[in-house]
Length: 215
Ligand SMILES: Nc1ncnc2c1ncn2[C@@H]1O[C@H](COP(=O)(O)OS(=O)(=O)O)[C@@H](OP(=O)(O)O)[C@H]1O
Image 1 (cartoon, rainbow, N blue to C red):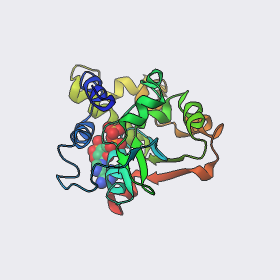
Image 2 (cartoon, helix red, strand yellow):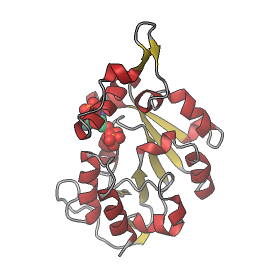
Image 3 (cartoon, rainbow, N blue to C red):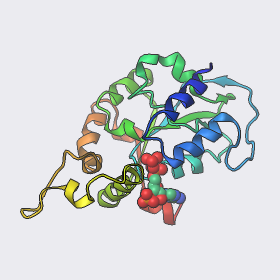
Image 4 (cartoon, helix red, strand yellow):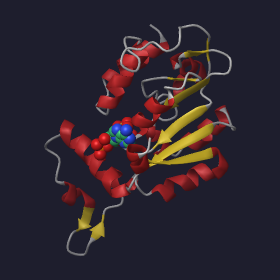
């Protein structure tokens, strides 16, 4: 079993898999890439990524990766490898094997939005490649939270309402910042962690809202 097919199998068992990931999974399987167009022949070498879309969940990360990978000098893995959060113990060789083959000069990329809120991710990514380029798609935290909640609700219709989850005390207007849909959107909190390892000049922030109107 290849690292990539093992990853696909693992992801198939994970409840957090999104429609976007499923689309990516088809691409990674080689059955279809960007609607069936085969862009790069399958030769070259698998390399560790030189650029990562690290977040944020529901920011528009899939749309951004699909837009970037249209470029012939970019090859991206369609699935979310979740290496720096869930699969780190599998080792760098496993991670490299998940990547598509590239020719000299081509850039390898992947996106896993949960990296942005993973405490160990900056340190781990820095130890792999301190000069890596990082991309964060940010979006209004409220619409991001609603999008996040809507996704969960579609899988678990029995969860409480958004309002119940968002407030600790509705009357006092006390927000429950420990609820992940809100916590993910406190961007500054997570960014501090990244800035311990990477200068701002290495991190590109993309507006999720602008991505829609001006891709
Ligand atoms: N072209 C384009 N540009 C910008 N944003 C887009 C685009 N296409 C989709 N979307 C919206 O992105 C939301 C999904 O974000 P992600 O791809 O980051 O989701 S995920 O974390 O991978 O599940 C999701 O937001 P919601 O619809 O509000 O849930 C998508 O609608």
